[in-house]
Image (cartoon, rainbow, N blue to C red; front, side):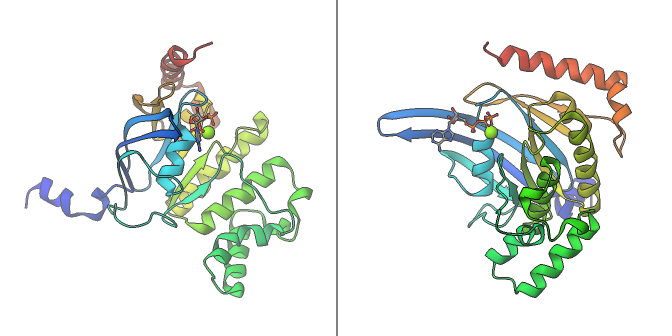
Length: 267
Ligand SMILES: Nc1ncnc2c1ncn2[C@@H]1O[C@H](COP(=O)(O)OP(=O)(O)OP(=O)(O)O)[C@@H](O)[C@H]1O
Ligand SMILES: [Mg+2]
C-alpha cells in the first residue's frame, strides 16, 4: 500500500470542516446584498483556524451558514465528511453577542444546550458541574450572570458552547469587548481548553496579534462580499506564550497581516 492510499484511508484525513464554494446573497424584495463571494476553507481535526477581515465583510454570515442557522446561496459544507442532512448540533456556536439568561445561574446557563436536547436534568447538571470544575469556575456555579465580570461571563458562555459540542467550536469574536489583561487571560484559558478537549476551532477576530497568538492558520478575508485574500500559517511553538509575540517571525506575520488588511479598509 503506498502512502497516498494510507492517507486516504485514515480517519485523520477527513477534515473536520470543508467549506466549498459557499456564497451568500441576502435578498429583500428586489434588493440584493452580496455578503459572501464563493469561499473555500478547510479545518483539519484538532486545528485552530482564525478568520480575520474588515467589519461587515461577512464573517458572522459564514458562521451562521456553517452552523446551519442560515442557508448558503451556493456551495457545500461538510462536517466530518458529511454534507447531507442537518448541521444543527454538529458544532458549538458562540454568537458574537452571547446571551446568558439572567434568571438562570451559571450552572443552569452552562446546562442550556443539554436542556434543549432533553438530556435528563441530573445528568446535565453533573456534566455542567464537571466542566465548571475542570476549567476553574466551580465557585461561581450558583451565581447569576449580573453578579459576574465581563470576562467571567464570556468564560461561562464559552463553557455553555463546549457543553453543547466539545469537538468543533465556532467562536465569533468572543473577546472583542474585553480589556487587554482580561483578554490575555481568556486567550490562555481558551488555548488550554482547546488542547485539553482536542477540539477543532474556527475563531473570528479583528485583532491581528490575537490571531497570531492563538492560531495554526489564519484566513484573511476581503471587504464585503468576502473572499479569501490570503491563508497564512502561524509557525510558532506550542504551547503558545505571550513572549512568542515578540519573536521576529511574529512581528513579520503581524506586518504581513496588517498590510493585507489595510488595503481592504475603506476609510
Ligand atoms: N439577515 C440579514 N439580512 C440582510 N443582510 C444581512 C443579514 N445579516 C447580515 N447582513 C448584512 O451582510 C453583511 C455582512 O454582515 P456580517 O454580520 O456577516 O459581517 P461581519 O463580517 O460579521 O461584521 P462584524 O465584523 O462587524 O461583526 C452586512 O452588510 C450586513 O448588514
Ligand atoms: Mg460579525
